[in-house]
Length: 242
Image (cartoon, rainbow, N blue to C red; front, top):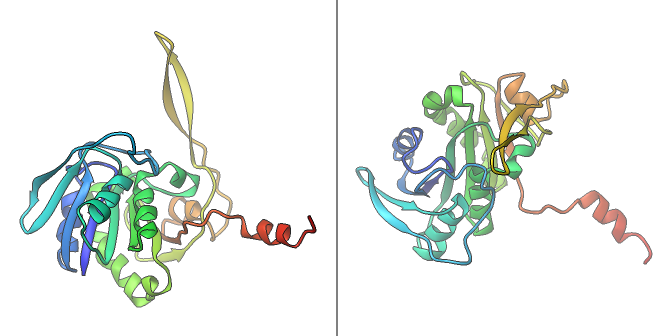
């Protein structure tokens, strides 16, 4: 299996090498990741100017490229620019959960969307900063769960979140609501600084990724899709006379 690893924390982030070492047990690994942190850059891509991509020494037996752009561009460059072929893209392990509506902003999840857009199966893996250094040890359990349920035979893209402390339990989930927002602190010279605030409110539901990870402390496995159409309303509108 040919595996591409990317992330939005940067190619030298603490979680990269443990994930690479694990992935090497599953196949041939390539790393194409941002040169510097690109958190919350969503699905941004560069279309107006050239950007740097350099080979770097990261791990023996692994080709690695540091890219001065976003995670989505890392995937685009690897497949469309460097003409590499992959069976699987793994984005992560992210230092911070990607749950609820926060996935709108996530560079980690957007790399998965870009892989799916280019026809490659992909998964995002994220955890809380408190468990980031240890999260790679959960990958065997995650992979065993994926294989047991033939998840990539059923769908191409998944968003997986690991609770703090890890878990042996998995739950299929759907996207929850907001759990993070910002206040903006005025500063000198007409500047404003975003200050993150926790707005999560438990809803006593087993369906949502937010509650699965933050309340029940289980692994969340959510199938995600490129199609943003509201299909229920679309079908209603299609049946209207206009």
